[in-house]
Length: 427
Image (tube, rainbow, N blue to C red; front, side, top):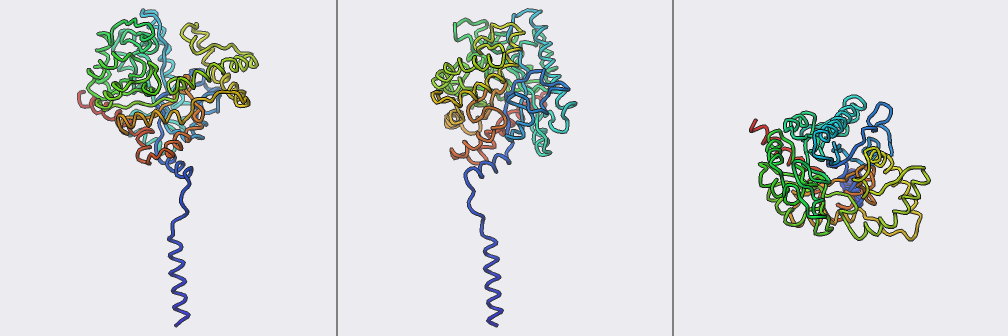
């Protein structure tokens, strides 16, 4: 009887031991679990059509900040590939050339998803698509249009872009377009429309009608104020940060942020050095100027400063876009060996902006973007392979899994749902 009683006690003890929880998660383990669980969405990744060919494409670990191997390594689920066109003359000839450029980028994205790597990545058109594709294990592509300039004066092209997969669009870039003034007007206080043109106001209504989100990241503040007034649905800033922390015209001031909250929209905090910390960026940039020139020379490549981009020829701009990642990667490697290099803008600086905006306008109105392959990238999140580091910093700051899910894309998908629901209701 005593023996039986002893066996029972041992059995109970073992059973209790088996039910004991595992040792507490480390902070890194918690961050990795959350990162693997939530859907991570980066709303701004530029592309070069030369990287979407049968022989050179995103199935390879190219010298780009975003490609499929880097997305897999870093746990980045969704990349918004950008149909970007620089600003040129407001003329029939300018519009025609821009249109050709835009269509080539739409076609490149479709080719990646439908011909080159359909088993690895799929184009999403709705939030339901995003969740379905991510659950299948594939990566997700979405399409944003940076600068409506290629549309010319033909508003029917807005619906054409929607059919091609565009789910957000900005009405201007660096320079005033036929639709909207750009933030760049702040430099000389020269404005073309004092906000939106009449065509721009019509474009807002048409974007609402077809279900394309309105992106306010590049247009002027006055244009943004008019967009909010005219739009029947929430708007987004696809890649901007807080002007209170970094006084750059590409960022949103408190008035704009509070208006964005009232509108129900979302600001996608961007990992772009000069939009995060001016002092650190300027000190680092001045130091890196010589380093990048040294790197370009050693590679036998021509090198231009980003500030020169607008004055370059089309051929030089293409050369810059191709050479930029090669030169900066080597330059960063050289700088890492230098003891006198000023600190780089980093993930902590990015999350400082997230903290500020969450405190000001709430967790439901803030998201994350990189501007990779378009000038973005910071220490700790220099390409898609380092995406986890952003989640890790958010966990260190005390954000919960639910909050991180909203920041990494939940908020953006909510806006997309509202925009598409309105379009479906009126059509």
